Image 1 (cartoon, one colour):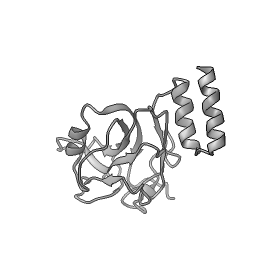
Image 2 (cartoon, helix red, strand yellow):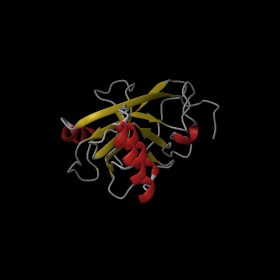
Image 3 (tube, helix red, strand yellow):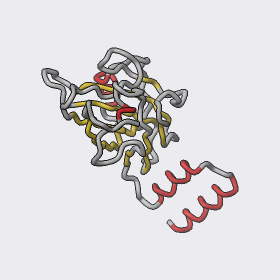
Image 4 (cartoon, helix red, strand yellow):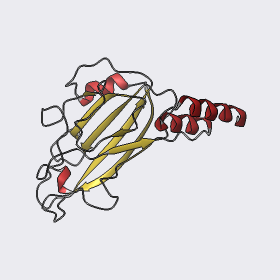
Length: 190
């Protein structure tokens, strides 16, 4: 195993392979493939800054991940609020699928997506990110999820969460979710 790692290191240094690819190879060789999703914009234990909500700039926070399984062909990013009362399912704030396997980040704003990535329909009935918009003083929890798939999905732009997750069934090889608190009327302003 060590010899294989040495060969890969030499090959990568000669070929000047980008760091994200190298990180995936190193993690896979070292059997370190636990998929983890994070955001430098959303601090654990803090309320989501207004910049990322409906009363702020309403832009998507940056997302980063690592520990990608080698069989990954694409990713799904899903941002949803499961606290909406009188609603049988979660409220989708953002749905992006067919994010290429070599992608390890989505930039803040959510507009500079890889060209292969496709956005699904959110629960506002539109395409793209729409931030949390909980009633003033009410605490809601936004769940940010990443799914690694062993395939690309044959779905059009505007596909619903149900359509995307149905198509992904049996193809999810890893996933991770983190949760952040949303509360309108909070004094945090970015």
